[in-house]
Length: 202
Image (cartoon, rainbow, N blue to C red; front, top):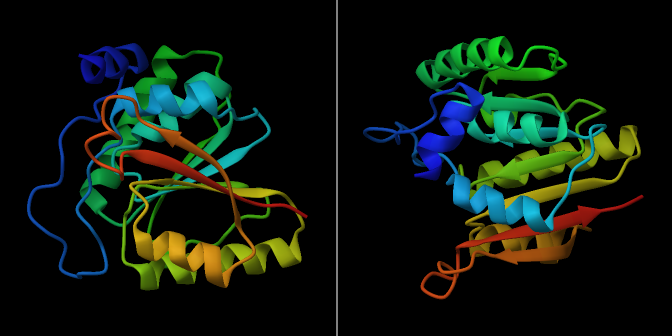
């Protein structure tokens, strides 16, 4: 099982989905991106160590540690659930203890996604369908405002991107679809089993 293999390799525990539902319908239940999906994504999509990736609804930090291990890029996890946030911090301690010599550029913030202040270095943003289109629009608009203030190339990575998300990006923003990564063996049965990468370049 890849879930066990990678968690053991990275010295973290990110398995398990959220029990129950969030109080607000704007926020969806947490579940981590499967490692087999991450494998396929990063075979076709590369990051640089100079990138800074923000994962909205990061849960226990799986994507953050996976990306940091592969690319040594800076990673930020934004999580509103305090229990998951604490588990992400515990995972960070265990990960850094095992990966001695790695740069400590792994950050976690406990706040609502729309309250996260976009950093001028943030240039890659990951969304696993974490919240409603209303929240998504607020965050994308904050990203666009940040780009106006600090020009840079920015990319959004959507997993299970809803039609609302893609319609908004295609029709109401300057983001353009750069790449599709269809998950082999899954996409054939479920068209949402894919990653969509949108780019905004200056």
